[in-house]
Length: 390
Image (cartoon, rainbow, N blue to C red; front, side):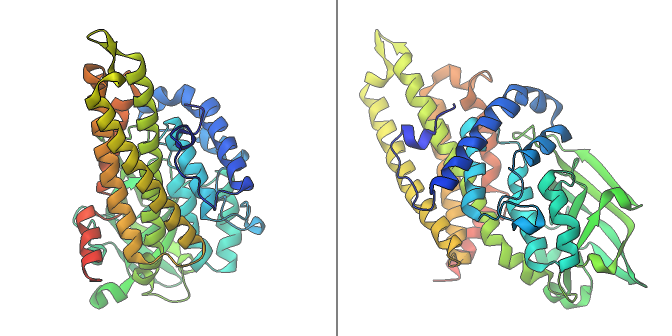
């Protein structure tokens, strides 16, 4: 779908999507349509992208758009990142993991890294020479980040990292990984630190399986093993140990808003494609759109998509202004991803039997949407965080 589904549906245009952001969206749509979509089935089959696609995205200015120009970025804001993620969702190449790379991994380095770290890593993330990942989840610690067991012990002017991680997005391709570790296990959350590992330069790092997932097949999601991996103490993010948990809490609202970005983009694409389908498909001598049940269902979905878009636009505006609080970000993550699941399911139903066929885009969307309610903190955890604010 080359046109913007939100515009096709007549949904509200965000005030923050000024000409520059709109131009970036159009350019990202062209890039995804011409460079990625024609090969997307291949990436799905291989369950991984290739590095060439990342380098092309970097050359096109689609990596680190919100990083300052002096570090190789485009000097934009989250609005620019939103434009890129929405383009990915509207074209239907949801497995391209540049959203995490751009607006989760790079910001940790920008906000907490030393000047030397920023100069060393951000330009290479902007070109795609380095592919980023963040290793939070462990076999025994998912939404509960305080339960992390991976240990980083000081050994002279190095850290020795030991532990395992799982469900790591970009895990097979990433060669710059921010590892959530315990530098002082006795202090709980206050003993948590973030340490950067450049995997091309260390021994003891091992990638496990490229995990076999229900959906988002094109995105590599992996187990990672750290077997006494030695990195310089200068790879610590922040001026001192024990700040990792605070750093994570400060950055999680943007991660959760980004999940909302993917949700609203897929909602809009699913709805636009379904409206096209029911206008063309006939049953009992008339188009499916002419049945009252179809009209009522689509009326409900368009109403909810409009509400979702207005809420999302407001969250982005607040975030750009520095006012998106963790509770509202949790609301956006849980509500938009829940709505995404509902809309895609209803749209599949309106496709009838064809909706269950993999050749129809709605089938892939149905599979890809499910994880949105799990990662970035489960929706149950989001409700817990919202509940604490009452």
